[in-house]
Length: 195
Length: 326
Figure 1 (cartoon, rainbow over the protein chains, first blue to last red):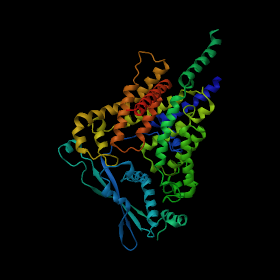
Figure 2: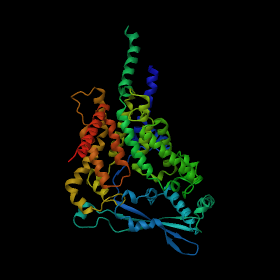
Figure 3: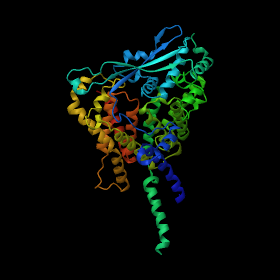
């Protein structure tokens, strides 16, 4: 192989290493480059940010509690709220669905804007509309239980604190784009419409 | 004279450096084994989608059409454009077939590309269905798909006959990936539970989001003398992993001199034990098997062959004992 050929071949692993290492470099020292590379890789769903249990592991468990409000003044708790009864024990692979991961992301940053939450709640509007009853709005609460520090648990305290419930947001099902999503879903999935 | 010789000498030195670091050829056995183990995990993970494929990725999803594209605008996915449930399910089935072909090394490059396209399409269509441990699946799938992983332990290799080799960069890139993963996460663990209180492992073990056992009183009793010291050991093991990769790479490049110790057994042995513990105690999707599979990249092909021969001999002995008349 010629030197040029070798250089071209060596570019492959070199580029791979740059794609692996660069997104993990601190922005304060390396400027915009790590972010640019990370954004480019995201196009093919590659994320090289490895923040498992960082900066600290979670010290509270959050559960979504959704209440649908209808035109006739009635209210109903939605399937997400089942977790209020079941989410405080253990988790095994066969209990977990990938939708639970979406709910987890939708629960992040209750005090800030969270697009994952916005789209999740719009999707919930579509899901509920399939039952034939389109909710007017959906109120999202978050229930949080803090983990007791190990010293207190060793002295006999419960491992999970009292449940704290708070209002997070209200999603309206008849505003844009949710209204169009519901109409489009009725056309695309007539067999799923139960009403 | 010296002026005339310098460019040629420099070119020669550059070629030797490129060969030594990336391009030297080696027996493809380790890479073949890595392919089998990683693709087996990917296939198992893929099969866990069965029953929900249309619900997750087709127009049956409550988030579909132009709104799915609007929700995840920075992603690539076939399923943004192919949405009919039957078509999505058919692509998924083809993807499963591609995974099996990749696993056994049958038309490996095509099978790898098709498998990769399926994963990109699933993760891109709704990235929020995939958690942080799932990231490693996409990364390993992409890296392996870019490598000539079908040159050993495969139908392709059998068809072509022996004598194939692969460049050493294949194993080294995986080593860089594993080193980056651990050190990056170690450095990001800057909170007080890791550095001051030593309670990080305790809090990870008692989180109902992914704990396997409700054993908080037991963990609390083990906290002072086991979990607290282990928290600091795990943190520093992760932070120092990139240094270990650098040391190991230097050792390989220098021809394994005696003055540079081989730290693979303590470092990787600790990693295997830690991941076994994590897998036992916590639900972490396929993270542990996948990352431990990556450890194979630290084994030279002669070591992998010796390991495989030892395992085969043990299995053979066990079968012989079982078959012997009483």
